[in-house]
Length: 155
Length: 325
Image (cartoon, rainbow over all chains, first blue to last red; front, side, top):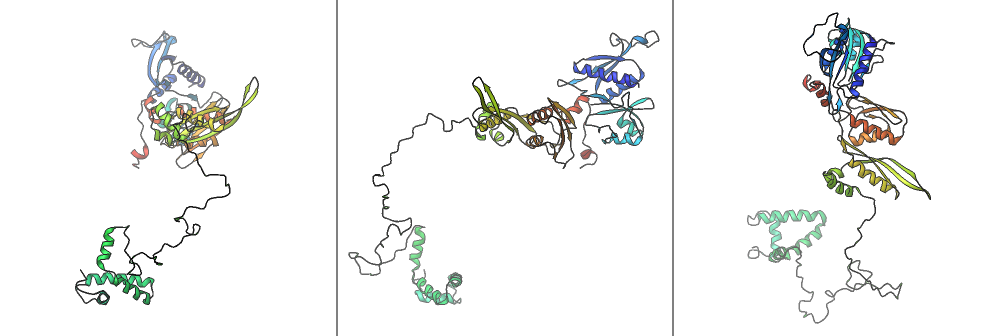
């Protein structure tokens, strides 16, 4: 995933959480979809819907070259006890400095050990790794013996 | 019982021999008694004691025992034929000079003549129910604070009395008025039940440090809040906190690590019941702000169950479930 796009995504989610926005839209791309699917699986967001610039689709609409420019992904954010569920979301690999992890590094991170400058995995935190142009959570990646780029962490 | 059968002296003889079946019981007792006495007296003394003991009639002894602890044996005067008209030297009360008899003298004490004009008259007035309370000072003792706050806050008085209290900051401040500066007193106190509850209170007074500390204690109890700890010994995960100029990084620690923290944070952890923690304070190390920043951040921590519930996940302790410890 383009780290610039990922940085925009993280910043957008942070801004939305600060003002308690219920739903928000992000660009409709494969990597964006995989990222938000990962977040949803981990329980950080409550829903993902395809939609247009104006809002989520009421009826399922096929994506064609004609409407691709107006396609957006709509995310439902989660809040509990007057706090947002996503307390903090930040990049690990920055556009200026990529962090690539070997198989052992991924396993170490998944076990809660620090890896180079990456602080250990906190309770109720998720780290996402990009391996082979697919986005996995660190535990999943460790289970599958994958190595890749540490993208971002959410807690 | 025994009088009908035998005379006094012969009892001893009988006691010494164990052949008689009638006196078997008494002979064993008498033997025991003789054995006990033989530990403390020489054989001659023992014999004389035994003779005198044998002269005591059993009924007299029994009646004395029945009379109770205050009974006194009646000892006859030395001269059996006296009619008490003459004084008996053996029976007359010895003259106890007042200064020689210790504390139990029957005579009145010798008057103190250091101040002869002093008549010794002591005037005593009946103390009426005082309008002023006994302790009118503003310094409240722990028991008083606990009593009053238990009513105000509807909490158990014994619990409030048992809270650990520690004044963290005690400062002499300057109170500026139009006439000049008056010294004032500031105290910051932490209060905790060493089991997950914590309160921080500030007290200020012009009347002295003790009053300020007492006020701080009061306010700290009012600010008591429950904390979300992990395993009742450390925080959940790590956190970074910035409070005014104080920046701190606080890390949870494994069991047995202890408190490797700033001294202010140490006292707060002791009161709260946090046993393992690591912390580093950067930039400003103002004790007042460290205390406030740390307590504020602690209050914002969520328990592991809350975090799991937010994400819709089930939380499982691997040690108990997987490793069955």
